[in-house]
Amino acid sequence: MKLLYSNNKTREIDQLAAEALGIDSFALMQKAGAAVHQYLDTHQRLLVVTGPGNNGGDGFVVAELARQQGQKVKVLALQPVSKLTGDAAKAAAAYRGTVIDEWPDENFDCVVDAIFGTGLTREVEGSYASIIGLINNNEYKTLAIDIPSGLNGTTGQIKGCAVRASQTVSILGRNTGLYTLDGPACCGEILFADLGVPAVALQSVVAEAQLMNREKLQELPAARANNTHKGSFGHVLTVGGQAGMLGAVLLAGRAVLKSGAGLTTLITDQEHQALVPLYAPELMVSGFSGTSDDEPLSAGKPADVVVMGMGMGQSQWSKQLFKLALKTPSPLVMDADGLNLLARSPVTPEHLRVITPHPREAARLLDVSVAEVQQNRWLAVRQLARRYHCVAVLKGSGTLVSDGEQTWCCPFGNANLATAGSGDVLAGMVAGIMAQGFSPLSAAHLAVLWHALVGTHSRYGFTMTASDLLDDLHEIIH
Ligand SMILES: NC(=O)C1=CN([C@@H]2O[C@H](COP(=O)(O)OP(=O)(O)OC[C@H]3O[C@@H](n4cnc5c(N)ncnc54)[C@H](O)[C@@H]3O)[C@@H](O)[C@H]2O)[C@@H](O)CC1
Ligand SMILES: [K+]
Image (cartoon, rainbow, N blue to C red; front, side):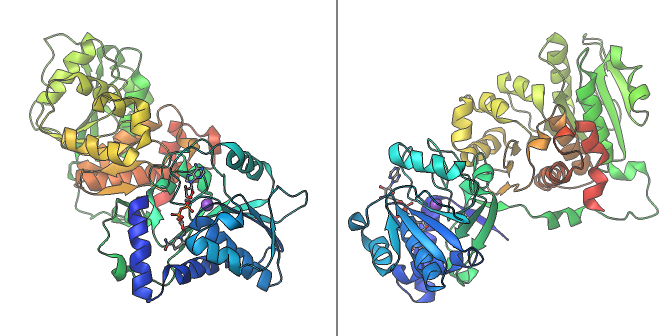
């Protein structure tokens, strides 16, 4: 179980860790430095760039260990050593090697970023920004201590500018900001140093979220009992696709079936009705005229899940369909234009179970700006879940899933998934998994994880389309 913490909580963790190990904060810094140095002992020429606080202190510990082991090391101190205080001053005093105050004109194997960690409080400017620019422009490996400097460890926002590390060694508590928004792009590979502190010593600290783990996919049944039929795996109504927007709802319908549901019926503009079987003969279809003559969406036995909004538009037709869909008693998964209509709807349907907004849709749902959503995605996803009494999936780099109490963060996925129709596939997967009996939270979690892993490992790379994504779903679970 990998727990994620805000900056404030990681500071509590530092204190508890020192108590659990029976050491003081300087000894803890030395342990942290030693843990980081383990990842550097194959490099012969190191440049350690240190800042004004304890992150810089960690850097001096690393530098001294490297020097003792015969590695060629220099410290570029952005804060003069004479101005350091506390543990950072002690670490600098214990370092016996060379300290410089300008970017050196020589080659290194690795640059160690020890400028800022959890103590970053403002935008990075001036000489700090210039040095971060130089770090990012060199071709050497860059290892960030605890947090890439310039990245807000809680929110994952870049404050002015930030180090783009090849590796980041997170110490004692994994910061939330490493995993969402700009975090993944700044961190590179994330390594973790627990400094030998038993998890039980830290259990009083409340985590913000948990990291998803691919093992969760094992909950998807690998084999099915023989004596079953398509009705055993759920029927989903896939609702959307105004005239000319058939693609979105087709992708979602196919994703419902590909994720294992037994049946799906597309409810889409009546002019699409004859086309659907030509593209996907396994989908049932019912045309919707948009007039008051339209039948209720599920005459007879209600569907197990309704997923709506993909390519639905916001026209009169869309509003009529939205109204009828809300009248079905089935659990609802809402995406895309369904969310835009929901944002303007005076009531939240009681049977709404999952919403899957991207940041712009989330902003409309919360009536704030996109920037406000992105400034603190952890808060935004919880607010969405609480306001709409459902599970919220906040898409983007480091997708978050929350029911308002528990929050999960997906560390997988990449920009291959930034392709038209990718969200329609995700919405269909959530509904398809729910229809097989998973709870809304579990279905959202599984769908996000599965979708992200397919995107990451796609043999098509950035040329992957949503149809390729669908075709490759089986590769991750088998
Ligand atoms: N507290 C502990 O017990 C431990 C702390 N550790 C390290 O200590 C770090 C936290 O140390 P600190 O709290 O000293 O924080 P930082 O080292 O991140 O930096 C804080 C300093 O940076 C200055 N500062 C903040 N934003 C700035 C900006 N934009 N431009 C210029 N100056 C800025 C602050 O005024 C302060 O002087 C952790 O990230 C971790 O690397 C580790 O040594 C493990 C043990
Ligand atoms: K750092």
